[in-house]
Amino acid sequence: MNPYVLAVLLSSLGIGTTLTLASSHWLLAWMGLEISTLAIIPLMAQQHHPRAVEATTKYFLTQATAAAMILFASTTNAWTTGEWNIQEMSNPTALALITMALALKMGLAPVHYWLPEVLQGLDLTTGLILSTWQKLAPFALIYQISPMMNPSLMTMLGLASTIIGGWGGLNQTQLRKILAYSSIAHLGWMMIIMQYSPNLAILNLILYITMTSAAFLTFKNVASTKLSTLTLTWSKTPMMTTMAMMTLLSLGGLPPLTGFMPKWLILQELTKQNLPLTASIMALAALLSLFFYLRMCYAMTLTIAPNTNTNTSTWRQKSSQTTMTLSITTTLALILLPITPAIMALTT
Image (cartoon, rainbow, N blue to C red; front, side):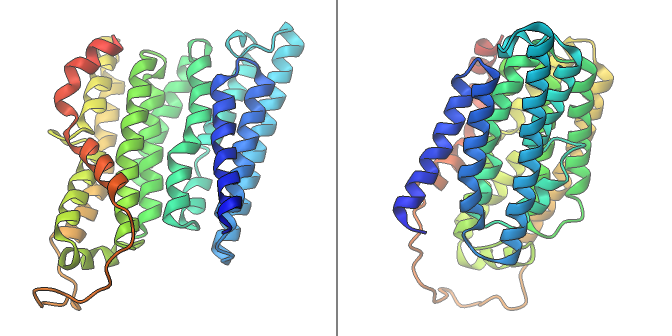
């Protein structure tokens, strides 16, 4: 892609999300969502591969549907209450509709079906943008309207996303689909805690973006998109493979890694709110996700492919990819658990 075109598209992505983050008016927020959607579509379709075009079409139709629902719900609210302010959503029907529209935008269950299919048709770099940056704008809107949202609807979305995100990834062999279901499960954790402690939901989002970026960048570096090709990475880059294994365990939420922090704090907050059953279901659903992370770790570090070269130094071209971002995100994904007391002080 022409670098000038790429620069325009990436800046439009940034401007669209920033516009939504900064707006307090529904029309401006809707406009920001539309700009970021239209900016990522050429990036998704740039490969000219049938799968990429199919994924782009699915993504466009889904996002257009969600945008139409947001516009309809905000107009309904303005019609009945005379208020366009995002934090003045008092019409319950409009609020429920806009909640489901934002859930569709992000890929929360039960409106998640587009996300694994779309992510599977993209390359890893565009997939990374879709899994991280594109979640920010809808999440910001959910954060702003969370005090007025229906608690039962939020709990249903959170529980369904966590369970389906864990269950859906169990049988997958494609890494991008596994990461898509991982995204759905993590978003479920954010939704379940949003009504009780929005700051914890933001913490979870920041750590999810860090860990997912590390996973995507690792797979991009070793040029791997299937579980079977992960078995070849150990003989080529043993140190990176070890770090990738620990990043996946961090995504699964195992101590003493960073990913344990949000799960621990969220379960603690749910228990404080006298919701032991919800906390138990969330903890058990996390085991489903942990299973497929362990499956990936097993494929990467405990199996040797039949065609592995047993020479001490295998011949290969030197990689031209920059690894600075990968190094930073991997480090953050592994060692942030000790700062939990400071995080607790900031979020309470």
